[in-house]
Length: 417
Ligand code: NAP
Ligand code: GDD
Image 1: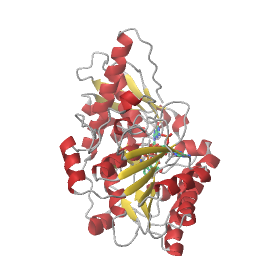
Image 2: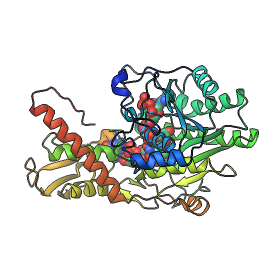
Image 3: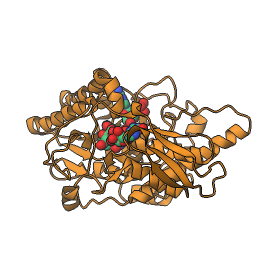
Image 4: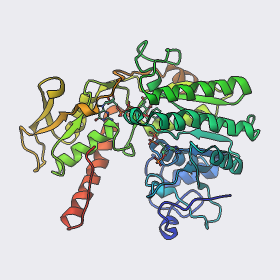
């Protein structure tokens, strides 16, 4: 079985990683609620003997899902693409070096745009479950790279499904497709549920629309156990830095420590249904454990604006904001600074920059996860404030680390976008 060079490229460091059945560290699953003992108990009591293949294993959801499946006793194979630098920061704690015996977390090089690599990994791993999480997942970027987005997000899904078919795995391999609330785009009803018509508003959403329907088609045409999880926005401290939630928590934490002056945002009125990624990957797994494959909306059923997200994050830092002016001149001015010495009342810390507006915007998303609740017993566990709090805490810690590095005379750079 082929194996990749691990991102850290350092077997000594990498072999520190702890997994059930191997050496245990204090927190082998730092992104889940699992303690080392929980994880060990789970794997010993209920070994599934199952094999999963995750595309997009290096992403936010890939990291949470890997932790979940490893804790359930799966052997987890992940496809990562080759980069000029390490890109496995979110999963380094799970890594097991090629020389370790009894590995249960194995990375393979591959790319959603490269059919041969997908067939090869599928053939080598012959998974019970495939979780297709890989995607160019940034909506704004999809306007700049529409063709690549279609290739990886739409055709990439087709390539994986075809790999299952070519290898004759239709009856044995179950398939999860990471579909999205962006399919609803210019929403046709509120809240959105499984029966709500789609109206995609970006190249990303159009590509995901193809992926949604080709997944349905392979289910109907070839009897494949294939499901779409229509997931509304889900966030965490592992969220990419340019998605709006992480941009806000990271930006405000840095501003609070005097490392950044101002946070520039786009559409402050945009409304989203934000949940926690840790809760959502449980549903990805649950969808593949049913008697029949179906598609499910996953959402919290609660909605907040970007402006409200800023207010909540600021409040958790002890900062009160006064929003002044309208439109592209709107700005957030500090009323109360909390105990942050770097801040002063009257300081403008959020402004609008139209470059973050999208050619076509999805103004509002609000999901109804009633079907998942009734059929699968799923409800989100993390509240909005708990989510924002977790993100603020993590970004404050990261900002403090950055400040320490700088104070000690080392060069450090941080992008503000
Ligand atoms: P993410 O953090 O952006 O992760 C995307 C993953 O896909 C990364 O591992 C990335 O690799 C990989 N990838 C991108 N292009 C690839 C290619 N051509 N070949 C192989 N791998 C590729 O996204 P996420 O938030 O975890 O989301 C997971 C999936 O759910 C995505 O499909 C996304 O569209 C979908 N989704 C997300 C949300 C949400 O709110 N998070 C909601 C609905 C649906 P690198 O690490 O090398 O970049
Ligand atoms: N990224 C970003 N940056 N978004 C901003 C900004 C900004 O500075 N200012 C305002 N926004 C608005 C966007 O216009 C959008 O309406 C909203 O904040 C959320 O933007 P993102 O966090 O980039 O997420 P998204 O909703 O476009 O897409 C995410 O969720 C989808 C599910 O609905 C991604 O994770 C997609 O992959 C996912 O499918």
